[in-house]
Length: 126
Image (cartoon, rainbow, N blue to C red; front, side):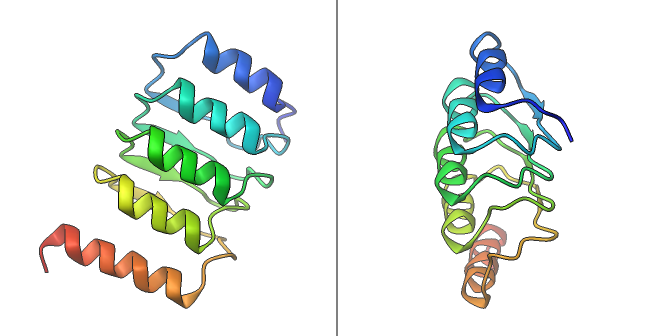
């Protein structure tokens, strides 16, 4: 139940562009604008925890997937995103990803999970 807003998060990450790990878990007031700023400011992130960020959408997740190419861990437990579009962007762009928590992701359809499996199979050489 952290009350940071997009403005507060943006100020923190703008002043700390070299961050490698960031948790905004429980920042229920974080919206797409703040997450886009995180993605654009902290391109060297290897771990990002978006647990219980209930106001982010696939638009922001696509920004994370296109800017934070070094992510090895992305936690989306009980977050509003992802839906199929966000999940597809994650698997198209984040080739170093080793940990992905989708627990409680209600926006992903069977088609999205099929894409997830196709991406995983391609990475394993199957």
